[in-house]
Length: 247
Image (cartoon, rainbow, N blue to C red; front, top):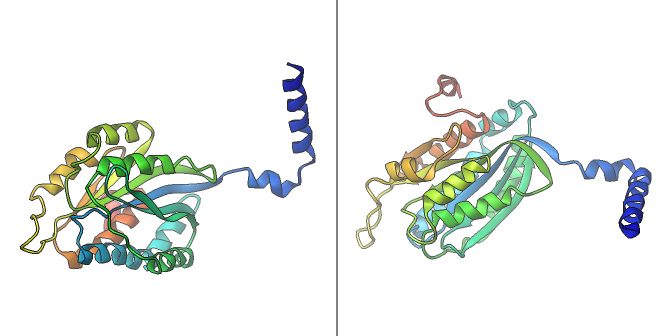
């Protein structure tokens, strides 16, 4: 008991004489949004699709509309991290959390992403990707008003635990999940993309307040869809919101 009291007194004294900068560093940075970009890197994603996915996010985050959307928030800052997932045991943070307040910082983030090598994964476990993404929100560097996981993929979650269990637990923890269903044609020698992937994402993947999904059926539309999705997420809108028409 004496030891605990002494430890408490020492802690108070240390804080009392700590420089102001040290105290400020301990306070999380307030942001409008903490956004996890969770990108499918499973075997079903061929080299062309993988390159298109990364290129789509890189092009979208360089667009001036991203900077305007960030600055338009109440705080004017967001936190973003980019990860890739495949099997229940394969999730990798490619770009750690960055706090962005304008297009210059967003461009720097994707310049770093563009310089990194892509490593393909194996099986498809959206649930594993969601579970991993939820853990990323436990950073003590920022305090978000909203938490969003942006899941993009081209197939069902066929390994790992139930996708709906992972989704429901994430939503219960205050996280919104949005989806980007890649329904683009595959080479003839590969298994076709599921014809109902859009409704699969609607019924099994997305969840939480204001959640939505976008289906992509032409690979050339990927970058445009990513930009639309990111601007909506940053602005806290959905495709059906009348205000989104002016973005």
